[in-house]
Length: 100
Image (tube, rainbow, N blue to C red; front, side, top):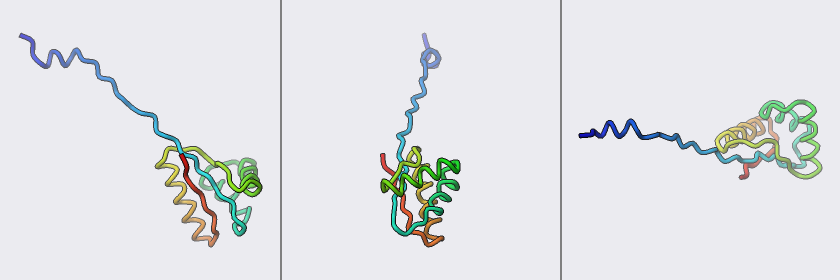
């Protein structure tokens, strides 16, 4: 007579991990936030190089917005909150949004 444990040892277990959905972190242009502050945000929170930060800052300024990174949702929302808090402390109205 076979035991249930014998059958369990024959089963193959597959670990089902799903890839997380990625979300875009988008910085928005406004007429009050200084360009230097936007570059500082990109350097501090998004680990961009000086060249990349300057390029993205000009893109935000000229086009109105720019995708600054693509992250899993929890990471994107955390970075968004950090940027909003830092902007509020420095009395800058910079806004960023998270989109799928």
